[in-house]
Image (cartoon, rainbow, N blue to C red):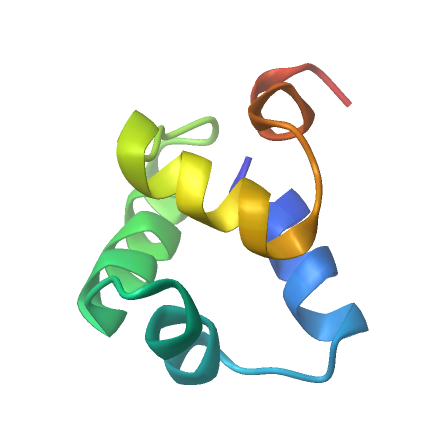
Length: 68
C-alpha cells in the first residue's frame, strides 16, 4: 500500500512534507506509515487519511487496498 503511494508521490515530483501539507495531514502520519510497512508489509493507513490521499492523487481508495 505504501509503495503505491510512493509511486504516485514520485510521479508528481513531490516529497512527503509537500503531500502532507497538500492533503492537510501531519507529515509524521506518512513517515509512520512507511516505517510500519517496512516492518510489516501491507501496513494500513487510516481510512480518512487514505481517502484524502486518494482524492489528491485522483485515484480510488481501492487503488491503495487492492493487491498489486
